Amino acid sequence: MSTLRAWVSAGESGPLITLCGEADMTTVAELSELVTAQLTGGTVQLTFDVSELSFADTPSIQVLLPAASTLRKRGGDLPS
Image (cartoon, rainbow, N blue to C red; front, side, top):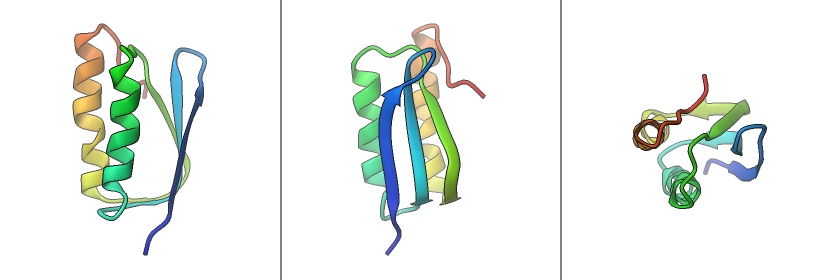
């Protein structure tokens, strides 16, 4: 069983989602819910801190694609 720890804090230009541990198919729903909750409020800029993330599988990374698309439509982006 993998362990993903994720939380949201205030970043310099909007919400900052920090991810620690492993993001895989057992945690993708949790990650998706966290990202969706941030987008629901009309967020334009969303930043991820993955410096403590030891693993991310394809489904977990794919959570970011619709988030990036939504942010671009709002005139924002996921900073790189």
